[in-house]
Length: 319
Length: 319
Image (cartoon, rainbow over the protein chains, first blue to last red):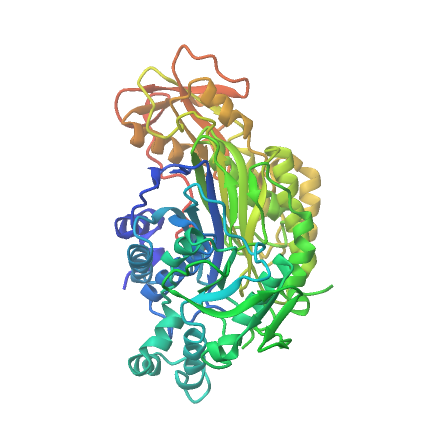
């Protein structure tokens, strides 16, 4: 093992840079004070999201590759949810000086593999390395709307259908499995049990630790005329309420269209939730789970659904 | 005092959003999965930099307003060093749940005041709030090249002059003062002594805790024909070496043009270091400190300068 402190910043960067994926949007890449990227239609989409050791991940459960993959995937999902094509990332990593450089190499490999698998042509165009007592990954992602208007949360209309692409329950089931079965007798995360659990429940555990959001369905939804869209990050109930509030409409969800109640509450699904005009031909990845009506709030089978649902980093992070 | 954990994410955001400055480049601002920004010439400049409690700042020395100011200023300096006009920031903050919400309010005010003072029209278009054991601020900044090519590190030519805008020594002198005189008997940062020190040495302490880089000189340098430019973040010696290496030239610095040896070694100056053709009319903020010659490396008064200089987050962060 060689630590970041033993190598120093320049040597660490020299080992990481060759692993990072190029972006097709690059005009000027890493190595200067800033990068320069193409924005062909004169606009760009930008979003940022952070992963912190403790509240957001545990090294006992996630490999470095998982972390890079998830940090890329969750940010790219926010770009896709605007109906944009992901083009590039910048990545700031803060790590303790006694961190093995292999952790950053694995993280870089995960960033690369997620970009190449989920959003070909998207790459890492810049970043920052810092020292911190708490391992932290902050990603900012960019996208190209290709001349289209962005698909916001505010365009849903009464009469639209409500549809989703991607599983709503797997990531939450995976988290529940990890918290109940990948811990030791004291309740602390246990890496050997996590490995065994992943072999037994690969879909659930990977949906939680290394998710593959349906990114291409974001553009497909925009082209199909989606009136509103978002990435389901905090649970279907809370995220549906966001579309309802922003659009000034009511969303009625059909419980029979869901895979049980986990689908309403489960966070980190990174499914795409969208509304479409009733006459629209839905992209293949989407399935109808409800409809848009005049009114406000979220109903399930016609009954107001007021359970809080969702996840708050300050209130729920103690778990 | 009200903590982030008591308020929860939504209530915290509701208190912070109204304090943040708007950006003139905004097409779609905060509140959706991503923001949409204007990139009028079909390109945008992007850079990211992180500030971590411990290695990068101490609450005993910096006010929350200082932190917001410095996080904005240092990132905007990297945009200016490309010859671009800063347009927008996204800001990810990770904080312990027991943090007083007033800290985030002060930080937001500092971001706003830095944007309005140093880069009018630039604002905050998005962000992320997370829970962490270590207070962390990750900023990504954007800029508009207004149709010009970026000023990189690689264009310096033999015969050019080497010039700098902004003080090279103040921030390092401020840091030295803080480490020697704003600590208690055990060497721990002491807030009362820092306040007294700031009253006695306002220029040095503010250059370190709330710097005001000469951002407008970045565009002025580009318009005046600068051939290479960067933001002096790690010390003149190390940053001059970066221009020399990228451009394949030698830089000869005149010691008499500096304010002593601190100017060669001192980090965090956020001065703009640029090369210009000999016949260029330098923007008013710049002063000549040397010249560009054929060869490699950095000389001071004709003698190779090989002291390491500069700051490494993993090697030097232990201080």
